[in-house]
Image (cartoon, rainbow, N blue to C red; front, side, top):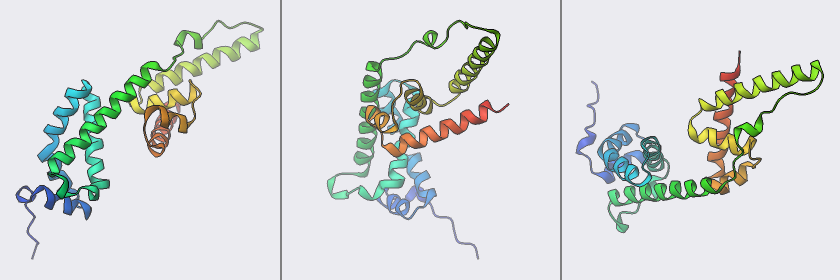
Length: 191
């Protein structure tokens, strides 16, 4: 006899959260369906960028998945708690943008120059330039968050800890973005 599928649409927010705490992915999916429009709408209104708002939505629901146990029903409704996570995540992103605007940048033209010297040096210089162009092409295909941390590390000389501080992002997140970005670049650069 097959167990009957559970109708998650009939469960309260708190019941869904209880199931999520037991790592029930279908409960998370139901909660996502219930609140995605509200979270996205708030995020889009605040950050004024659709892809960034979508990223924030994912972060918010990952927070529910990983830290849903921090919700306390005596402090307010679940929806208020969820929207405050979204609001705080948007504020963090807006602060990051402000900090990024203040970071010095190196114009791409400053990274290239005319080769000088004997034939061997010129050949080395040409191959180095081709490598740079391949690297910039590969970087352009990375998601913005991964491209940003790689740029900060390799072109601005910041350590992962410094990047974490500048972006107000946990060090583990920075390391993950760096690792994923470098793996993608390696795949893109393999001939």
